[in-house]
Amino acid sequence: MLEGLLVVGVIGVLLYLVVQALLSSQGQQPHPALTAGHWRTTHYDVDGHTKVVVQKVTPASTHVLDEHLIAEIPVGDPDYDELFMTAMGTARQRQAIFETEE
Image 1 (cartoon, rainbow, N blue to C red):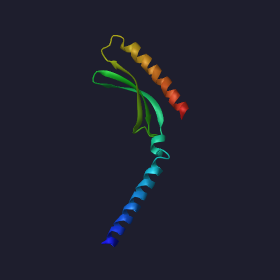
Image 2: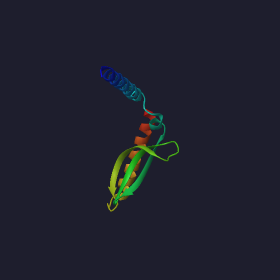
Image 3: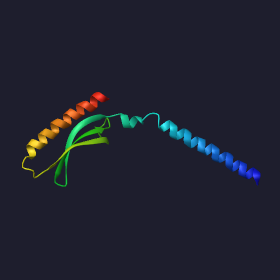
Image 4: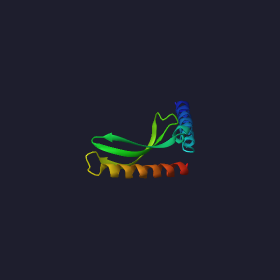
């Protein structure tokens, strides 16, 4: 009985140490897939609004890794063109900032 408890205790300690080692190794550096990629400025329509965003995408541009909303403009807004052009200019500036930070 005592030997069984000792075995279970040793297995539990070993399992705990393995989990701690795995968790601490993950926290040291971000996964390469999250850091690889490039920033792009884009826009898309959702529910009657145009969203102007800056996205970080994979090198092949197949997956969005991060996205920052610059503006959300109602499609029916009478000043849509002016608001859209201003938002796209801001998005391009933000893209340049993100690229220089990396």
